[in-house]
Image (cartoon, rainbow, N blue to C red; front, top):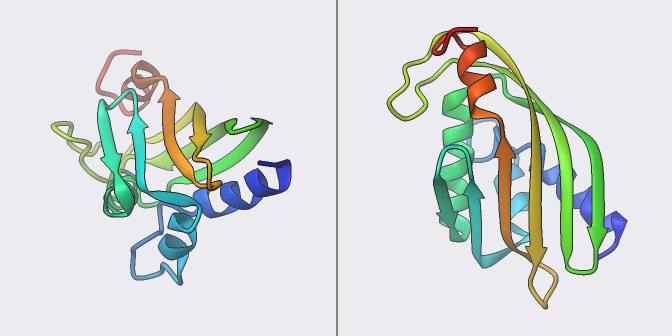
Length: 145
């Protein structure tokens, strides 16, 4: 993998909140082109795991449900052979339920780090996302500040 590959993947990944929606315009298809059919995508703080391209579509739909204006800004990116990592700033408004937590309508800003590994054929085989759930819950008013 080279930095160019990672930049192309991140451009597709940044659009995952619209992937599969009415305004998709091919975002989901473009994203899964970078992923193995057996990809394992884990959102560590929420304890959710998505597998395969259908799982990626579900992850995208849940992101869109969680925040209808979710945006990502890549801050850093690194590659090392078949491994990659990137840091993003996530902004949005909690416009939808997140599991048992009802929407609060409050804005949030999060720092997130993702770590992934490519398969031998150059596709994302696994990715884990890490972000501060406590900070999120404070920002949306579920926990005291």
